[in-house]
Image (cartoon, rainbow, N blue to C red; front, side, top):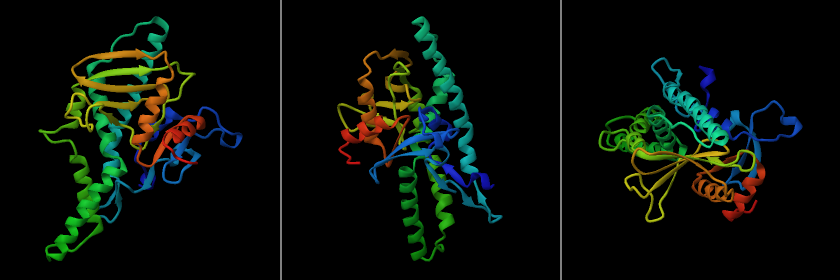
Length: 284
């Protein structure tokens, strides 16, 4: 199971949609991406293979005393479906660019997208670390009470179970809520813009209050690749395709994504990250 040692907190194939557009000679034949570190205040070119990875992050020690990547494997079918969805969305954009019209995104793809967005809202380290912190306190208290001996692996197992339950109850199911939103596939001329993503790729925004999925006024943004993003708005079953001719709008989208990032912002070019850093008042 050594191939599961380095586990991506953001899907590797998803990040490839933001792959660097031009590379130095020494990076040829390497899938790379530009990374703005909010903590270190640096911009570096990095291999996508090593971006957003942590050793055995979603694994636990099983009864055979081996690292078990069960949860990492559980993510994979959902991740594979996203590749199919992204391809279909790109086909829609190509068709509308050539014919000024396109067929709609079918309901099956909408359901799959909702599931993928849900996964990317809960699997990020900021969420998982909070769950682990709370679980650790409970297990330490149980030890103090003489009920159970503290065990780090037990904390990991309980935390993973908790992670899978986030937003998955009958009363509060994130996938269902997302599926019931209106969908807007928005895009720019591919060669003239660069949309970024981050280690917190699903972003919520509400002009009226602190954002939350319970509010119809809260919009959800998700970059599909470096020229396409998804916007979920209101409640309904509309699906629309929006071609933006004002390319300055991408600066606002990138600022929103950068401002909601936890530790890192990812981009196909360095200049875009420099501009985001300036708007975020980050001195490089």
